[in-house]
Image (cartoon, rainbow, N blue to C red; front, side, top):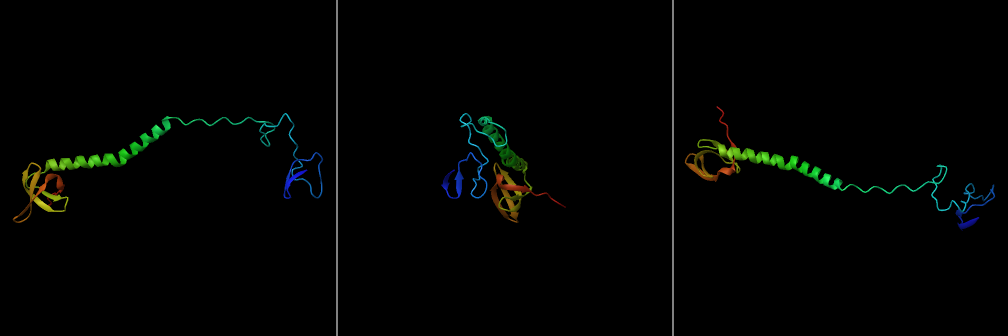
Length: 144
């Protein structure tokens, strides 16, 4: 029996030792010269071959991942913003003299004059301001 440390026994004896100081590995046999170097799975009943190498991932996998991420960004961020911009363009086109609007600054008033992209909004009696049409956020619906 060969020992490396007092607590670790290596090697196998040919005769079974019983009693005090028996080798804990005494049930194992040395492999014969023909079997050395062949991996053996315990309980499998004989030598086995090495598992096949893992397959390389497809080159389509990263491309597919990029397409999925772009689709998520499109439906969550880009598409709703385009719808909102289209709705705002339609609102600006539909503005006319006499419409009541709320501007992006929160100013309420009635349109008195439209000159191209600039409109004049009356916010109080004899108080008029000139603003860009694109800064009209909401068209007030007259409720009576």
